[in-house]
Image (tube, rainbow, N blue to C red; front, side):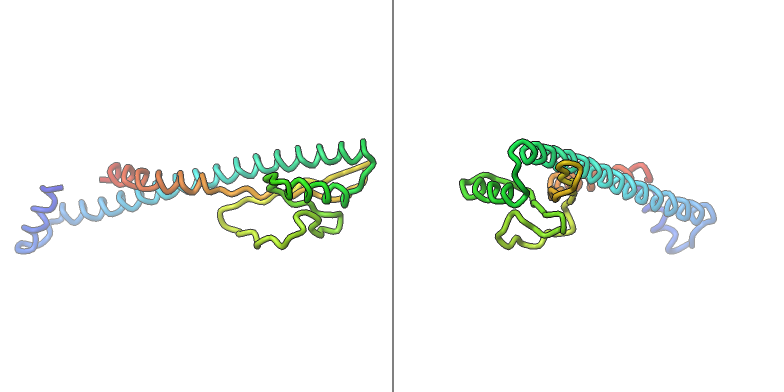
Length: 168
């Protein structure tokens, strides 16, 4: 780096040699390519993390839906009664991070007005609740991807520095 800088300073008085012009052009091309490669690596990591979070949320929503289906089948209850029981559990302090929707898509649980779900930094998935072959509602799970964002914030500078060093 010092040699290149000294040559560039010298070129102010004598002009750029052909070799220096070719070197600068190639170094800019390689540097841009390395930086782009670093950005691509970060993008792929983020995409994979969102896919993993979506799969985990889908598994959770499906498990909850199957439990509610079994409970509704055994007890002979409807989805409104299930929503009422969930409200009672939430009032006792249970941390229930889900939404229960009826077959028309109307929210039954939680009944209190919830803040709007942000579209960035979260994944939202639904699983149907089917009792006796008929869909009676669905469970919606919203999972934040904050951990992924923090990981990328920590990793991004390192990946970009490594790609720039490789380019240099």
